[in-house]
Length: 147
Image 1: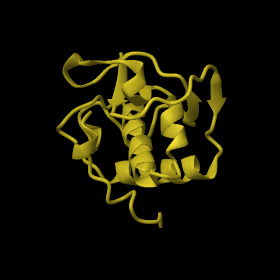
Image 2: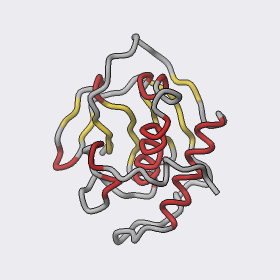
Image 3: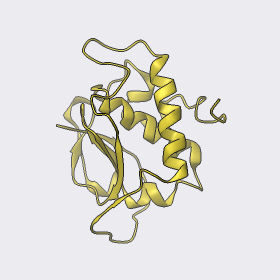
Image 4: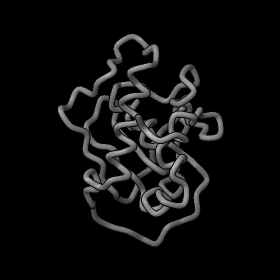
């Protein structure tokens, strides 16, 4: 099952293929912020504060339909990112990637949300960052420089 972040975003130009963006400075910064955030949160049973993989990979690619809270199916054009629960790859839509400099806090929150999926946490309202409702997510840790 894919855990997805569905948000109302404008359609990006058609994109095919996959581009590894893991090494880019903004992704590295936001992965660091996400790791620090998840070290401070009380996790649900079965989740750990460290991904099962030695290293997460972040790619830009076209999205596919995915399910969010309560099995709601989101069409690909409204999905910013997706990560298999316990998976090692965070996939970002071309629209999410294009917004990284215009909306750095939203981009950071997206990375942290997807990092939660890599930890094995599904979309849930029990953890504010993991809801599939972007407006309900806490973002204070993304609004400040990492320490």
